Length: 258
Length: 335
Image 1 (cartoon, rainbow over the protein chains, first blue to last red):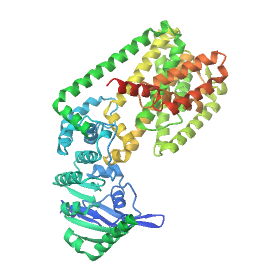
Image 2: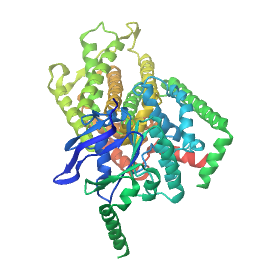
Image 3: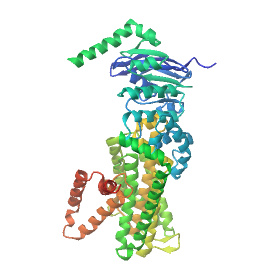
Image 4: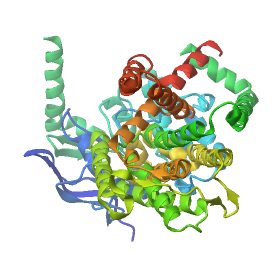
């Protein structure tokens, strides 16, 4: 029998010198869902992502991926299982062409990443697939551009194309719309929706309209612990969530005006 | 934004144009390298061959170092250990076994440096930045004192009177001209290995790691193992340079193992242009030429001061190095 949850954490905890950033979080992500992780600043959302992909080592707790523990594995091994993350700051390879960014991801499956005696021309067979992926995020016209020259929104699109090149089973997106204007946000929403077909997505997101449009299930974090979980309607009606979220936002607003 | 859309439009309309442009660039590059090789072939007619050989050995050393610093982003402060190990092992074997043909001696020295590089790398590669540099320096100092103390190294005197021997047991290398063409072949081989490494599937991953290490990890690459390979290739080719140098000068000395040498190769690489293909060659050329000419002239005692001043000026004014600066100039004015 297939496990009920694609990704599950049990008592996941991270302490930094006495400060508990993530406090016994039990996260359960169902197959095929777009699952949002929301919460006020400093709630520990990104830390959870870092723990899931082992960029940080949990102090306590367990991580299960398709029912199997992955808590002891290394970051790159977890990625090889199909649990692939993106980063808050657009993570691209700036000094490579846009096409090469995607190719370097496709290349992993070729298994030649240590072959220093071969010509890089053997990577040309990946061009077709790379261009396909670029076309999906509307970047084909930029294929030969140096990545550093792309505008911010395009870089995020490229990052998504690179992630999709690995054909991940579970996609972890860390604030995919951060720092974007309206047009780009709509573009990213469309991209995530297309990318989520046949996959499970977990995303950290601040923009609640994006969350309401995309997500099947929402986990609200506050001070490192799970405050509530449910669909968007339930969460927006939840008194504690409103307090935690709106309270902090109201405070932030007041600070900005002060 | 509008300029980007122009690029997009241009690329969409003429997909072949980009290919043709790349092919033309490749042909130009090949032509340039052939011309360089032509110059190197006739150079001993005009310049003293021993000087040229010294230059080629240091150029290979700097190119190997540049592979690590420029393309893997790792600053080693212990490369003298590999230069010296290649030299000492080759020197010892050629002195002890007179029947040994020269290329086997060099091969043994090169292999020894590669293995030493593997050892250094395994210990140092997990550390970043300055810590990586300090560990490589500490290990290289250990190697230096080993060469001072060990019974087979000749202590302060080093190994002297190493026979040049016969290449493949056939060709006598005692004439400087024959030796020069052998050294040139060794350099071309080493340079070709580096070029191929940079433009290989492995080179692509290395570039990605240098650009954004966490992202490379999140794509599933074992970053430490890739860095280790770069370290071993660099150490091996450094050993090749050291072994060849020992055969040329018939001498393996402590100078090669001293940390000054590790600093000198950093100077050569930065001066010429780190991360550029020809930078280390130019850097080695400038440093070796200055050292040779100044040390024979009235300014002999001032060599280090003059090199230091050049280094400071280079860091302040030409951060991309001589070749990096020229490349920028060319791409700004001829595009």
